[in-house]
Length: 407
Ligand SMILES: Cc1ncc(C[n+]2csc(CCOP(=O)(O)OP(=O)(O)O)c2C)c(N)n1
Ligand SMILES: [Mg+2]
Image (tube, rainbow, N blue to C red; front, side):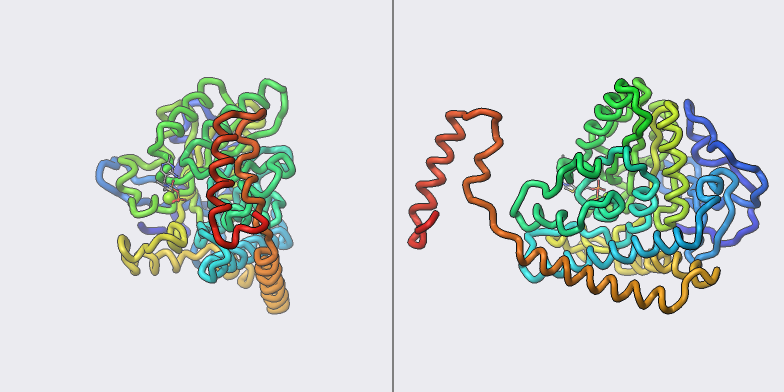
């Protein structure tokens, strides 16, 4: 994979307008900008070099893009610092959660390391009344939606089945069944469209999930019913130990074309580009122009989960190549070069990160074990003979232990 880093290139049509059959070109562009950044990876079976929307190079240089600049045209230094802060705090939270798993405080953790820009850029593009359907790795999106990070950890500690009220922040519970949330999101989007709302829905999923029937079914329903849903695929190159090449013979964003809506590949390590492209997709969904697919080209820097050992199936040099494209570092370089942030900003953020880590640690350690019999609640709305039988069996089993007192 290469990312071209020189500025002066011939403007090219956007991936969106190229792939789209029902979508419009990104609206509101002035046509005065000088270049569109592209990059590509050619794998077996791919006939065309895929395009990739990029507004910030890995070196932090801002490059102009005729299609998508309009979507971030008014961004202020304060907002850029805000995006940086979001990414740093999300990474700090994630590192703390990984450490807590290693210390035995969590049963499992799915790290987002490396995917901060994809998540913060897209999460910050959502409006309060939009609805988000995440996988199990969207800790950065949860942060943008205002879900307290400590609430993400209950399920991974095994003390609850979710940890937050989905309707509190319009952020659905984490979904482990790969790809199923694409259907939930599509159904939800069809529903709000029927209600006459001008909100949009965004469904997150991974490159591996693109192989699931549920995702293709969701694409088709969304297209046919013109549902206001944005499909946001974080292509982090791996589905546990299965590489990207094992998932698809065409670039994933091009799948959209076959279903009749536009698809765009964005540099998922570029928070600005991700923000712009997601705003474009959400805005057209809200206007009633139907679904879009965004493929955020990124990399899972860590293990799939804390139960995984990526050294068994991938080489260190691959990770090293992606480290050079670190999403946080590139925005820092940009902020520094533009004079938008000084040492005191970074020092204060460091202190804020440490405070967040401490708060998360303390909150996890203070989580109470649930009532052991709570697992039998809410299986059915009313009582059920089989559940009663299983509860009785479990009670007998618990009572068989020497320290059973108080069970
Ligand atoms: C329906 C289903 N099949 C298999 C699994 C096991 N599984 C958990 S994560 C995963 C890989 C998902 O990869 P991807 O969609 O790329 O997301 P990523 O974990 O890389 O973010 C699989 C196969 C599952 N949870 N659900
Ligand atoms: Mg993946």
